[in-house]
Amino acid sequence: MDKYIDAIKKRVCAICADSDEDGLCILTENEKCAVEIFLPRIISVVHVSANKENMDLLYLELKEKVCAECKAGMVSGNCYLRKDSNCSLDRYFSLIVDTIQRVDAGLAF
Image (cartoon, rainbow, N blue to C red):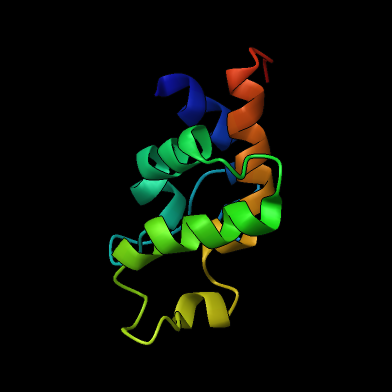
């Protein structure tokens, strides 16, 4: 798991809108990063998905299996964080998936 966390910090956290100029998270104790909370589940979805090559289908699968567990989502499936572009998982989805796949391929960051 550490290799995924390190790679995500280097590639995603470093450019995240919720980080400072050094790439360190600036979210408060009351705020939580969806990527941080759900990283094990995100990795699992990427690893077991039959849709690895189709980002649109993988995105839908991720929403079904990860976003459904998020407290920001409502029963109707509408997410106020995603609606306001404040969900880090949604905002950096493609980069997160690419990072996981590159780690799996043994590529260093």
